Image 1 (cartoon, rainbow, N blue to C red):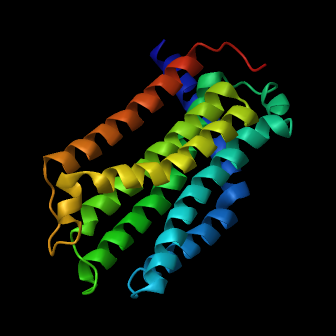
Image 2: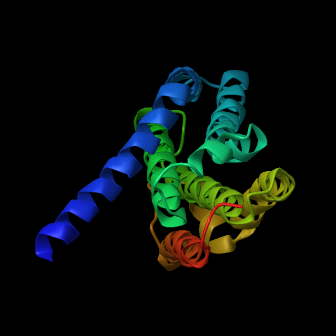
Length: 233
């Protein structure tokens, strides 16, 4: 019984890895391009005036587009291009499929996101004309983009609908500007943004904690709802 269970787990792992390799082969060039553009945007942040704002807009756009293209290419287009019809013939379950899509997308996005976050914080910290007080604010916004990506990914997996994925994608993109304004308008955040040091007060820490909790809840709900599906339709 133990040997059978071990063999079954290995088969599941092999199927998940195969799906992840497929997604990597189809998306690696796009990911490399966006990664390079992201590094360029981070470098622009070190300049003053117009170049800084161009870099900021480009950075936010790259982070958003990276997530959008990952979800569209690895989840939405599979049903649209009838790839799922092929998956039906394979010995995989919805959970296998969900694990492969969730793991690949989170790793692919998180690696690019994390490097850009580290680069952004590094530029803010070491560039003289930029106040270190911006660091908590920048991190809060970048984590919000990560949460938005996870929400879009979860929506695509659960709904299997291009329409609903685009709706949620549009809402989250619009919400970025509103979220940035909301956070910047908080006195406990705003009063430190132009300061010489990064202030990690209770408000900043609580917001980051809530963002991480929301991301984990979305992932958990996605796996729960996917586990209730019996077969590909």
